[in-house]
Image 1 (cartoon, helix red, strand yellow):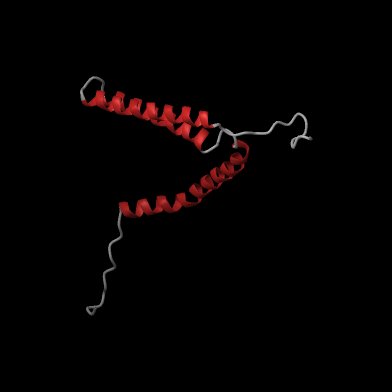
Image 2 (tube, rainbow, N blue to C red):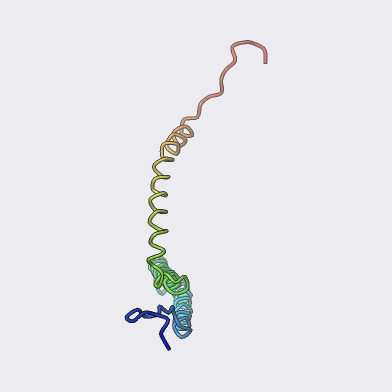
Length: 123
């Protein structure tokens, strides 16, 4: 019986159930670390700034794991690349187009115009 894939081309399989469980366990451990760092900061074992940096680092690690495995970015980066790059280009263009309006609006609120004064005695 012939193979569905040509020779030399392997079927691309995504993550396995075992990999999902490993990532879920890592996420649970990272969540526990966040609680430990928060507890250590409240009990004055480490500084608040240190705790913030550690919790932020844990959050970044968790976001990378979720993005890579649960959102399949590790396996479908080629497709995502062609969606993300144009979005970044359009976002930058939109920022430059709207920047004059933002600056003008900010300067107008800094020095608000006075309401016009009527010269006639009637309203």
